[in-house]
Amino acid sequence: MPLSIATWNINSVRLRIGLVEQFLKLHSPDILCLQETKCPNDQFPSKPLKALGYEHIVMHGQKGYHGVATISRLPLTELVERRDYCGVGDARHVSVVFRHGGKSIRLHNFYVPAGGDEPDRTINPKFGHKLDFIEEMKLLHADGDAGISSILVGDLNIAPLEHDVWSHKQLLKIVSHTPVEVEGLTEVMTKGAWVDLMRRKIPADQKLYTWWSYRAQDWAKADRGRRLDHIWSSADLDPHLSEITVLREARGWERPSDHVPVMATFDL
Image 1: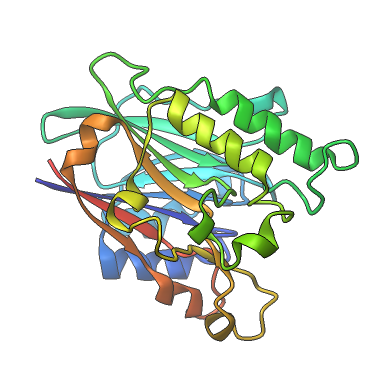
Image 2: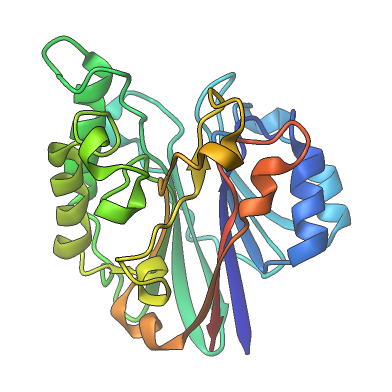
């Protein structure tokens, strides 16, 4: 049975709920993980999503900042976790467990701190916070729950590979592609035995972006993108991956997010 999971930094779910509805109607993923929802749980716009058949919604939100939400057509179990990374009270993680194709799967939904503009923690506390967050993520293992497979998605705010950015050389000193961030995220993946599913389908020597800055007058023509959004899994799910879709055209929708949806489809 096919299983489709999408991730999207929506940059305010209330402002862009119409785009979420548009995406769900066009692509109908089984589960959609949203980041940067920017609203408390009691103000999350659940009604239009439930009207489309997404009756199972787990949120971890806060007023005006951060926030993640996982919306699903599939039933979710009671095994919900909301981890407070770095102990500062930010709503940046939620995980759920669901069953599909005879498997139990834990789905992690992350919004990693952006890290500010200056890649130096001695003068930029936001960058230090990002590095500390990544350090704590190294404790998360894909096989951490016995008998449960794992998928990790979200805006990880790091483009780790050379062709995950429009210019490797020019972005080496730019937050999201600095060597210390890349090394940290690579360790999260290797220590946790995670598989980078996007690069399983799209070779590492090909350009791959999920984010284009609002600052560009013509984002499509300039095409100065970065791959900040990721989909990983435990090794047992890797052979079941059938497709990765990066919905580039969503960047050109009316009043868009600066990120676009990414979707993985599995045959389970």
